[in-house]
Structure formats: structure tokens, C-alpha cells
Picture 1: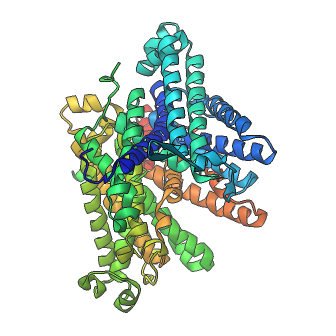
Picture 2: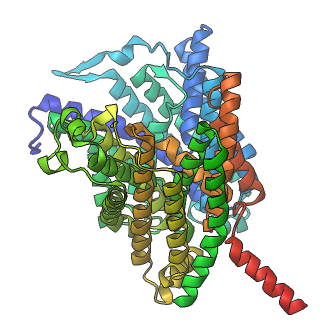
Picture 3: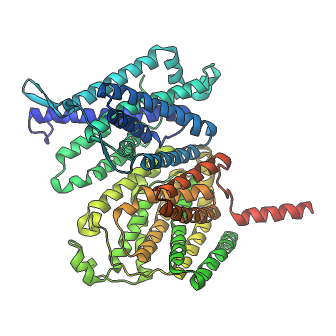
Length: 302
Length: 337
């Protein structure tokens, strides 16, 4: 390592794993957003509410005495179902509408869901008990690394590999990949539109559910706005990577995670509260250099 | 040019007369709480029109304009809070600002200029991006300035917010500035640049092929509307006398965009109409909220209103300027009769 801000091997490993775990959470959310955007042209503001749905599922199940091992998979399923429901009720009637119409409708939907959670459960934060292992550190050859970061990174990487295999190795997946490149032509090839769109929403919901697990593990609480900030970061990740590009979204997520971690360890104490502003200015600088994002849809790798 | 001026004037009068009536009647008869709503409505009008002049002409959404409202508000506050108070409540203002104490109109102009300047700078990288990506990047603008307002303690007093701003804005000055906003927005809309920009909304590639410099036009519209937004923010600060950074974040953005979507993004008349509709809905629902004790009811109703409008009238309630639609109807009648 020749980077000046890293003083020891221990710190370097720590920062790297921090960047990977933060970046992989953003990547999962950004990938879900990109998948829906590339197929239906919708930037889904209500994506954050899928994280919230998964979070509250965990909270409610735990309160009814169900174990963490049950709560996690059911939270992921709940988020996927919520995404399917969103598509069916709110977005299908607007299919083919302009970018702005779709965007505003998802914006409105997001506000409605947030307020519903506030009105039916509580506007305040609720604690969720997280298994102790998430707070402990893993010791490998003199290095200690947080289990939370390790589990986050590993799970996200597994999710990405599974999704890639699905997209590249199954007929359904190849249909989705084709639809993300050119939806109209894919339809003409006989791929059913409703199924492709529903699958895209279900996948984006499931990815949001996985991301929600780590969002909750990090905060230890749920509240009606909990999905908002992480998804805001995911929006930024999708434009860094190139809006509409699937691999771009993943790259963008890791780039943003990396920027945040590097700023965290290099900014002087007085400037730390401004971290998000600096990170976003850096992003805007990247976009000045590459207005189309790092990987545009036409120049996509693979 | 003369035709543009006349057309804009005609539109301004048509929208200005009902607004003036509301102001005059409100001033004369309304109880203080209602008058407050009227003044805030007129100020909000300036803010909504500012966003309309960018988003309505370019077809690009902006979640970032509330940042310019904030810049206008903070700038106006800093130049009008009495210097005695400034010296004791702010920790790190430069000496010249500590003793600066200007009147209402200069404060609004300084607020307008400051936010136009910031918009011009940040607009350089933004305007180069594709429509969708630029819209999403404006969220970044909102967050950047919120972080600055919230943490730059020496100049903004951070999360504590600023107070003791003299209340300069009244019902007639709010009216006057909102009419000015309507007029400049109408003028901008029919100007050569506005017309070309609106053409680029339908097909940016075709507009480029015909020689329109889309990046430059978007930058000009962004800067112009950032300035108008700063004007609205300054008026708002000079009426509400105290505020904190959270008031320049997503709730405010949602409210202003709701007005625009409900009324119709494409026209200034739509912005005015939507602002009136949503203000009325919010006022009613806040009362229901208070008596029923269910929080968030007002926001939910506004969100539902957006969905209903988008389902049944995607272009909003008024897709075209009122006077343009009237003139078209008159012409049609004349030619058929």
C-alpha cells in the first residue's frame, strides 16, 4: 500500500473491508433500481420503502417470538412481494408513461407508504435485537475484522453471483438481460412483457430485502424513513455507473462506498460532518468528466 | 420581441388579477391566520414558478431547487438581521458582514444574485448530463447544501437555525414579487431560448441537429430558475423570521413538486393553479389532522392527489397556458363562424 492516509496493514485491511461492505449494500440497492429502470424506464423512489417493509417484517416477527433465522428469509420474501404488489397496483396502470410521470408516481407512493408505517405502527424508532455475532470481531493472523462487515460483503457477493448465474445461464434470465438492453425488441422476440417486468420487480425487492438485513444490523432499529438514506445513496450509485446499466450500478455502488470510506479516514475532524457533501461533490466531478457515467448502456462490459 | 412582451404581459395580467383580488380581499377581511396562509401561498407561488421555469421548459425534474431557496433565505437573513444580534449570536461571520444591515429590496436582490451564482457554478457539470441522470443528480445538490447549512456553524448557526430576521415581507410585497415571477417566467418561456428548450424536451437529438445547443440552454434555464428560487427563498425568510436547515429538505421539495405535478408542469398557469389547489388541500387536511390526531394525513392526501392526477391527466390539470388556450378557442370560433 502506498496510499498516504493508511498507516498500518491492520488499518488498510479494516478500511478495505469497510469499503467493500458499505459498497456492497449500495450495490445491491442500485442493482435493483437499475434492473427496474432498464426494463420499464422507472426510477423507483419507493425502492427505499422495500427496505422499510423488510425491516418492519423483521421487527414484527421478532416481537412475536420468531427467531432471527426465520425472520431474515421471510423479510426478503416480504420485500419481493411488496415490490410485486407495487408494480401491479401503482405502476402497471401507468405503463408506457413518460420518465417524469413514472418518477413522480413512485415519489408519491413512497410518501404514502412512509406515512402508512408511521400511522399504523409508530413514527418513532423501534429497536430490533440483532444476534451478538454482528457486533463481534473476527481474528485472522493478527488482523481483527468486524463480523458485520464480513457477513455483509460475503452475502452481497453471493447474491451478485447467484443473480449473474440466473441472468446468464437461464432462459428466463437471458430474456431479462435482453429486455434491459432493448425492451421493445425483446418483446418482439416473444418474451412476455408482464412476466419480465414482474420478475424484475421481484428481484429488485429481494435484493432490497437482503440489503435491509445489513441496514438493520448496522442501526439496530427500524423507523418509517429507514429506507430513504440508503436508497438515496443507491440513486447516486446508479448515475455514477451510468443510469440503466446493470453492471454500472454495481460498480457505482462500490465506487461510492470506497469514496465514503476514504473520506472518513482522510478528512480532518473539523471537516467530517461535511463528508456527504464532499462525497457528492466528488461524484459530480466524476460526472463532469464522464457525463454518461462510468459504464454506459452501449459501452457495457460483457 | 414586442410580440413576446405583449403575450407575456397578457398572461401575467390574466393570472395577476385573481391573485391581486385574493391579496386585497384577504388583507381587508381575513383573520390573521388566514392572511398568513395567503402570504405564504403567494411566496410559495414564486418558488413553484421558479421550478417550473426549469423543469417545465426542459422536461428535466429538479429535486435540488429547494437548496437555492435555502441559499436565498440564508443570504437575505445574513444581510438583514440587525448587526447587534448578529454579533452576539453568530460566532464566525467576517467583519464586513457582521455590520452589514440592508433594506428589504436589496436583501431580496442579494439573495436572488447569490443563488443564481451558485446555480451557475453547479449547473456546469449538471447540464452536461443526460435528462434522467441530471434529474437524479439534482438530489445530490439538495443533500450537499443541506449538509452545508446544517454544519457550517460559523455562518449558518448549523442545526440551531437562524432567528430575529426582520419581517419585511407583507401581503402586497409577496403579491408584487409573485407577479414579477409570473412575468419573467412567461417571458423566459416564449423567448427564443425557452422555445428551443421546449423543443428539446420532445426530442433533444433532433433539437441538437437543428442547431440548438441543448447543454447551454439547460444551463441558462437552470441558472435563471435558481435565481428566481433564491428570490422566493429570500421573501420566505423575510416573512417567517426564523428557520432551520431541515426546512430545505425533502418535505419542502415534495410539497413544491406536488403543486407542479398537480397543476401541470408545462405551463406557468399550471404552476399557479397547482399551488392554489395543494395549498387548499393542505390547509383543510391539517385541520382534519389536528382534530383526528392522525399524523401525516395531509402528506398522504397530497400524495394521493398526485397519483390520481397522474392516472387521469398525465399532463396535470392545466397542460397549456390559460390565455393561450383561450386565444386558440377564440380563433377556432372565429374561423368556424
